Image 1 (tube, each protein chain N blue to C red):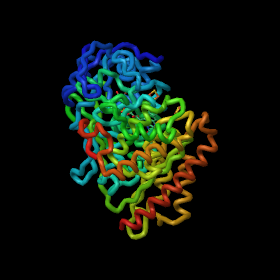
Image 2: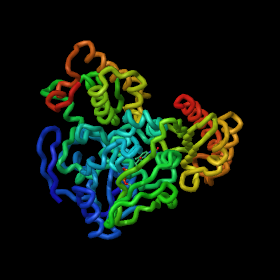
Image 3: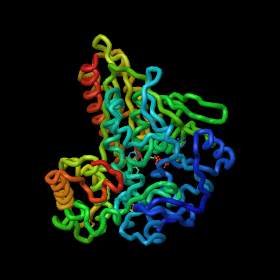
Image 4: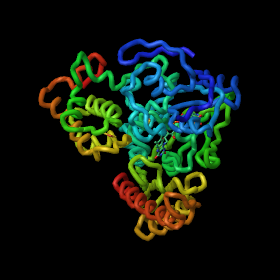
Length: 170
Length: 290
Ligand SMILES: Cc1cc2nc3c(=O)[nH]c(=O)nc-3n(C[C@H](O)[C@H](O)[C@H](O)COP(=O)(O)OP(=O)(O)OC[C@H]3O[C@@H](n4cnc5c(N)ncnc54)[C@H](O)[C@@H]3O)c2cc1C
Ligand code: FES
Ligand code: FES
């Protein structure tokens, strides 16, 4: 079957099998390997992408279900060579070790900060509670997200460089 | 890599369209809502539908509103929307408490109320919560819509009164402003299914319990309910002795099985304890609401 959708702002048309999962469509057919594929059982959250600007687990959605919709992957966070504050936070505060969980963590973090610019630590932990990290013990992930929130507060600017382009209101 | 069996994909544009697709493709066709129960089953080939009918476009089934003195919840309402609804928090805080512990925030963005109820997993949380609140279920089919009472909806594990050519469209809960409600669940880790869970709803009149609902999940209670505990409560004051006796009846009024989440006697004990905690909070809330 044929599908058409917008991926990271670009229109995409492709021929797929109906049983193809969104995570494999993104990685194998579009070459967007930033989105990772881990447990395959909706538990680890490394496959999180935005479907119509809402974080979802792309291993548990058929690509066919995204036909006509809008997808954002971790590749959309950086704009014109400028990293999103969440990405900077993960880099500066060691929010990752092996990096396997990182794309899903960052997509959820960006979404959280777009909806709740000054989350408490408890709110950050709740937001990422459906995502597993086997390296960091989560502490540095929470710090990285808090750092991104604080930068936004201090600058009084839009959270993500791409937020306006994505139509997300801070 | 888990690959589901091949299927044809159809997308429904309206409830009538979904129903006509179900009739046209017969019993090998399945609706797909959030897909967070069905897709894992398809990956394991426990489900191999020949046709999937996607109902995610039916945004007219995504609502929470009050009509005819009832709280009405559309079948395509996502868990996240139920959790965030001020209307739900005002009338039945138990539903918010249940949603807080259903899966995780990302799964809740996708999983739907209708999908949860129609999956009818024995450990499903909303079924127990709705049972305690005396909800009814509106089912649409070729002949029109019928309202199924709670007891008649859940026929057993993974089985409901919704026929292969029908679909669930709405859940209705009668409004009782003075009803207090609470939900208690024990899970092994954040986002997990319940070891056991208890839902309690209480309405007081002149210091006496006029109405009571006890819902249980993950312990194989018939229709997710404990009628014995409910009978012990109604007509009595909401004092410690009454609540404790009802809670211990609930522990006996179910049929848990031993599994990796624990042995049978542990689960019965857990049901009593969770029921008591839910009852105490529901009674306190009912007192404040008089
Ligand atoms: C990691 C994980 C953890 C979870 N933890 C919990 C938990 O702790 N507690 C809990 O209660 N649930 C839990 N769930 C289940 C979650 O709530 C599911 O989203 C839900 O059970 C199914 O909803 P869905 O919309 O995804 O349904 P789908 O998977 O789309 O559908 C499920 C079934 O219902 C049928 N169906 C769907 N909608 C309708 C309709 N309107 N009319 C008729 N039939 C319909 C489908 O044909 C299918 O047979 C968990 C799920 C995951 C993946
Ligand atoms: S790969 Fe999707 S949740 Fe683990
Ligand atoms: S950094 Fe290795 S899994 Fe999170």
